[in-house]
Amino acid sequence: MFIEPTFQRPKEKRGQIEVICGSMFSGKTEELIRRLNRALIAKQQVEIFKPAVDKRYDEEHVVSHNENSIRSTPVQFADDIMLLAGNCDVVGIDEVQFFDQQIVQVATQLAKAGKRVILAGLDMDFEGKPFEPMPQLMAIAEYVTKVHAICMKCGELAAFSYRLSSGKEKVMLGEKESYEARCRACFFEKGRS
Image 1 (tube, rainbow, N blue to C red):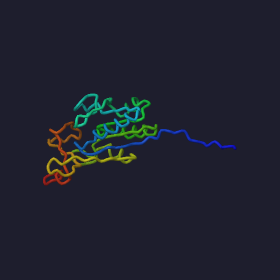
Image 2 (cartoon, rainbow, N blue to C red; image 1 turned 30 degrees about the vertical axis):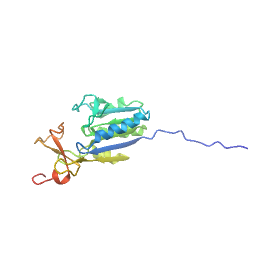
Image 3 (spheres, helix red, strand yellow; image 1 turned 45 degrees about the horizontal axis):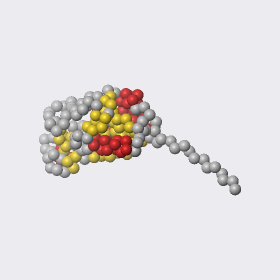
């Protein structure tokens, strides 16, 4: 009896983009670290990047507010990630809002190359406006996860990062001394536009 051979396509690596977004203190970095650790447990090759400007907790590690950490490579420019990602399966990028618009093209190229790209960052700035380039990344992502903090004023779910100081610069690195998580009502309370 003759059995006709079946054609099986070689299993190709399918890339994808995942975005983790939310306010300060919402657990974005914690979720990024969790996903990257699961990939490492699965024996996947993982490369992790963060903007060189972010030295709040550590110069080389991505560190969550809960002090969980994972080794990373600090980079000046989004294009540096393309040069350093190599033959990995998974690329993790923290604090994406500190990169310029080129990060959108970098994420797209990495996903086209078959990599799972996981990006974490603030979706809104201290004025409650979309924080570029996050809107573009969320639009092209297969998966978007919005995480929430707890409002420091009333205890409700918080989606906004309220700046405690009067500085107007868009990027101001800081922690609990500079920012609070706020719900919509507390963020836009009387006297604040």
